[in-house]
Length: 198
Image (cartoon, rainbow, N blue to C red; front, side):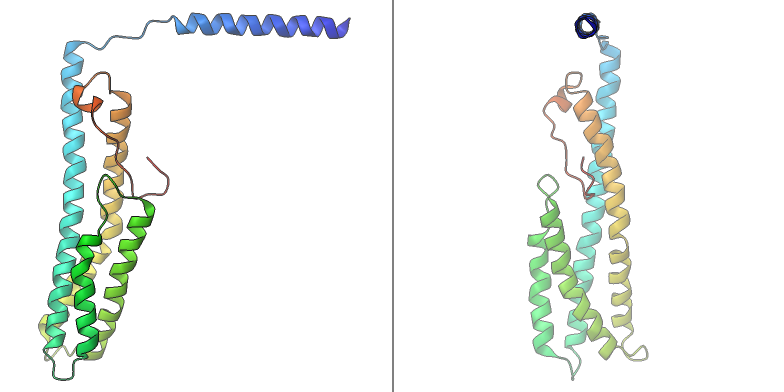
């Protein structure tokens, strides 16, 4: 008797929940007005500009780091006691780095890690060479180049964090407003540097 009553009670609760769900489904969604669509389109453009601007800033910094690395290797190669074999090896590796760099829309954790590891494989022995040959009294340019490389290297984490912040805002907008903004309807969400995802 008790089991029968409990079953009937459970069935009643289930039917009530289904009825509420159907009622909720019938709740009309607020239609976006023409004025709101114009504002959303402007917001999308601003978000995209911010995203692309931060990516460009990050790539420009990395390009400068590659250039300064090239110049520093050249400066060391001019020394009479320079380790030519090591320098040549590092010059070749540095020249290949840009072609190995991750792409904005296709980057994944493996491609980021691969590029970072390849760059570290150049910068670590380069710093060792600087420590071996640098003399502030004789080679001022060498010291300046080493400082420039370190400055750009220190900016990597900050620039990637800034980019991820812009990417999250952009991705959220694209997912939310595909039906409201034509440009968002055809836009792709972009990957992040962070392991927490998009």
